[in-house]
Image 1 (cartoon, rainbow, N blue to C red):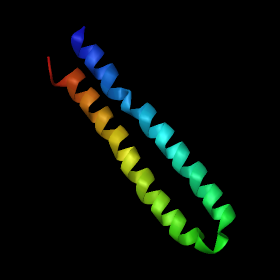
Image 2: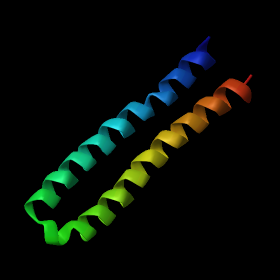
Image 3: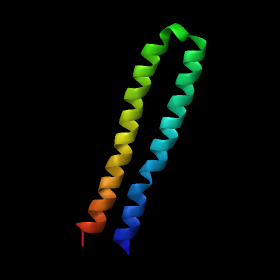
Length: 72
């Protein structure tokens, strides 16, 4: 029971990553609308930030899988 609860909590990192990626994309679109000439720089910075946020969610998923299948 406690392993399943720990796995569920570990998977919740996906919520934070989703919110972070959504906010980054939103603000990047607003920045590009204000300064179209800086679109390339804004886009590359946004993609790096989104990759880091997504890595956090993947680490949470990995911890959840390890809790379910390894820690018995």
